[in-house]
Length: 393
Ligand code: LMR
Image (cartoon, rainbow, N blue to C red; front, side, top):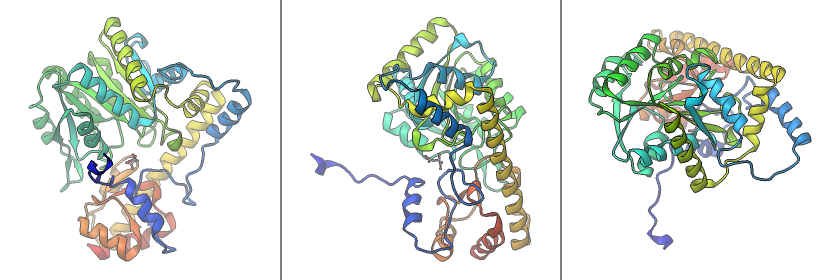
């Protein structure tokens, strides 16, 4: 049987982890996978998370099952963090999932259950796992233009033109903030215009929000999504705690569905419950309870928020510093967009050959589309990095 399997293509982001690990050069630089790193190049456990884990270790009295939707305190806390009071809580149902990826997978499967002929519209470019999961679950996908590589800004006219071809009931997947891989984001007026189009054409938004707090702040990053939620009858949200709580390997995420009324909400809740049961029964508990503990405790929450804000500001400083270093190294403003972008990533706009050259000649690892992880930038080696980039241009 196994001989009938076809070799699977490696995930272009995840394969970088192994390639980087195998590189023996001492001055190698990892700008690949989206993991936050501090000044020392480490991915620390956030203070509030560590404290909540100690409490949990002391207080947890049982490892028995919780429930198919996971920890409902966690689900409610995440609902509030993402949506605030944009919609009445009674219209929102949710399931704890293994990471944001788990939420995307469950929501795609729910779309397939409800609307197997719908097309899911993805930004071009998008996180490569979006189209990969979509294909795997057998849903139709289509792309809308999103990024203008000449200006390194959102191609909003192209986006609206392409989405005008979507048919009623189609799903439009939007990045809530910190667009991955481009770092170019919709502004408030553009969110409003997208909302108008969705309502006009009867399209359903699905928001992937994996970097809340990494762009302009915890609330600012959810503003577009919240504005949309206030206006549309139905909406799906996949939220991740991997980055903003730094709990990557613990797999913590939530799938939320906003329904038009209580009956729809019950149906969506039933679907999410069944999908959890079918795919893995109970979602992993540890990380979700830790996040719920942080969000429920005033002191832990304040500590977490302050640490998250410091991470965000560090990434902004690094953006500004790299843009300045590249301005000097290339004697041009070609890379100034890096300072305007928000989130963990931007694309340098290099060819795959140039990316490869940076890897082979300098030990600089970024994704093949020249997406780099801002948090991986070494503050004290930015001139060196900018010099290497200038040399491969
Ligand atoms: C990334 O885009 O690097 C992260 O979201 C990690 C991943 O799973 O791809």
